[in-house]
Length: 191
Length: 82
Image (tube, rainbow over all chains, first blue to last red; front, side):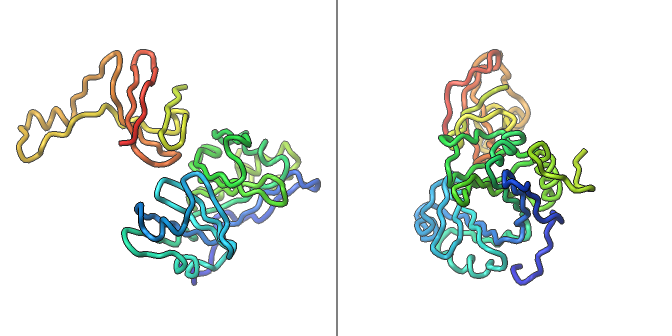
């Protein structure tokens, strides 16, 4: 799948405020690999991340413990084969490149937590979801996987959902950002 | 709002989960009678009081687990993986 040209389901690139309070970006083209591995398998031991946490590998791949015995590996665009090949498939293990099947957004900036709190039902306080936290919940009524992946000492969240909801989710997030100063382009309204 | 304690995700709004119904013992298909099998498939106690239920954490860990819930008060007193 990774050799196919990626076509984003979102169709809108990057929205931000001039003061840097909010940045909403479509990063659906990043590599996403789903690993399901039974306990005691080489893959499970190698990934070394428990459910609800994440860590960044030396090559920059973000390893997310997205469910019990399930991990999502996130990397830059076009690295599907390399990421799949980096995980041992010995034993009861499933490794699937899901890059084309999921949409992904990144929302960053000092106001990002306030925007997300408007539409997400998970507690975003530091003690519940610190930097590196991986969690799932409803975002604008869409079931999403979220990762808190702070950048430059500022809040940043990765939000991933089924591809077919990507366009709606971006529009809904842009709408939620509007009161914080983002100009929502014509045609992106959810109303 | 009913807060359901998922053993993996912690307390969650019941809208994040799905109630999969009362826990019912599955009879052996090789030896059961048609009456017993029909009862297993379709009949539930549905008491006004404590009942052991299976819930599915559809927005979080996507695992099934059982809890005891009082159907009159929605009090919940136990959570364990199943």
